[in-house]
Amino acid sequence: MQGMELDDLDTPTALIDAAQMDRNIARMQARMTALGVRLRPHVKTSKCLAVARRQRDAGAQGITVSTLKEAAQFFDDGFDDILYAVGIAAAKLPQVRALRERGCRLAIVVDSLAAAQAVVADGHRHAVMIEIDSDGHRAGVKPEEDRLIAIGRTLHDGGVVLQGVMTHAGASYELDTPEALQAMAEQERSRCVRAAERLRAAGLPCPEVSVGSTPTALSARHLEGVTEVRAGVYVFNDLVMANIGVCALHEIALSVLATVIGHQPDKGWALTDAGWMAMSRDRGTEAQAVDHGYGAVCDTRGVPIPGFIVSGANQEHGIVTLRGDAPCADIEQQLPLGMRLRILPNHACATAAQFPAYAVLGTAGRITATWERFYGW
Image (cartoon, rainbow, N blue to C red; front, side, top):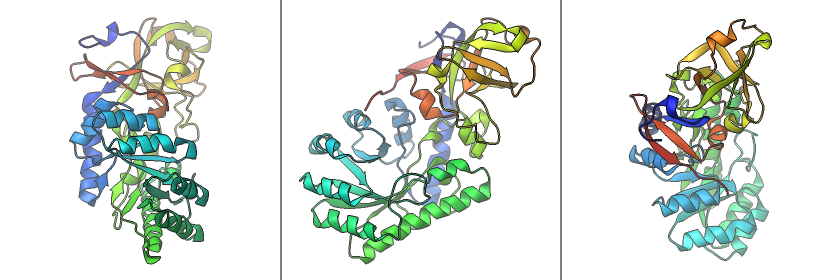
């Protein structure tokens, strides 16, 4: 695709606005540097070596992954400081051990006594983080629970490396004011730091305190006691992040190039070739103040076309209408057959996952490169 114009590309195609992505990377890195912590980006958003290299070149230290396949492929490319931030299953420990024996500094996560015991029983000196529940969102041990100390002692006495504690304030995705985001960032920080303090008071090592989500990373006023922050979606941003308030629409670096392939004039519909197989089924904006359907519709410059969203989606068809029930009497004139559109995603991670590669859009409006992305577990 290198050197091609947008009108020459097959659709649907995932586009990265390289200049905007670089600004997103620089913004997050500058903020973490100012707050005095390391940035360990979560590369599950892009699953792309070229993107992760840019994050590393900007100052990131280490990466976070969501699959062991990511860990292996990034390690093969020279990324050797990796946190696998999903609770470990005993059946996956041989894969972890194999990577570590090749020299990968791969750390794993547990949040139960049973998981800690399984790691110890594996017989390898694994590096382990204990996941802390700082917001009731998903997984983790509450910082005041007795089992936190029991897990820590099981790991330490069992001969593995108790590397620290980590948390993810996923509940921040439900917020949309600066005050609420700042409060959540402080809750995330203070509860994870408290867990570390309790482990240390019990005579257990806890050198690392790892927190992070894109909304809390961009909202924290200070990060005292924290050693590193993990954030992922900031590299592209998306409509959920825009609704939360941590980015503007023009700061979304990922879009899907689509073609108008038909109309239903009596319904006010334009049909595109980017259905849910391209955009994903993620409807993350549905519960937010502004519902963008399956995506917000822009022209090929990335400028939103006022009022238009992908309001419905079938497997290979996207249904573009005006927001709500407003009729569009001249849909065939406004969005003519063959017109190219760029559609902004609700959830960048989910939309990116629909594609084997990204077309990289340069400042002159031409494709400057094609970057492959990973699949599988």
